[in-house]
Image (cartoon, rainbow, N blue to C red):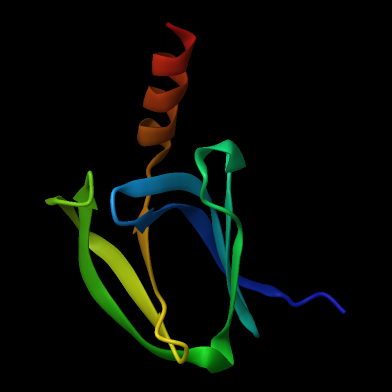
Length: 102
């Protein structure tokens, strides 16, 4: 049985200085992220919603250091993991495509 998507957007997952753009979506049971390019080393994530301890607003950081946006969220789970998701604009994605085409 497939869960209904409650919300979806394009986002970046950040893990220290590693990051990847991809599809972020929430269902009634899970928070999901699937990178557009898994070759960058960040794999898909499915976080069961019943394992989430808290979600807080945070600052998305360029290179894991410099704050670039206040629109990010950090998800903390029962096993001690945390995941940071930063919303991504269409312009941001197009800039990546243009840079790769040069």
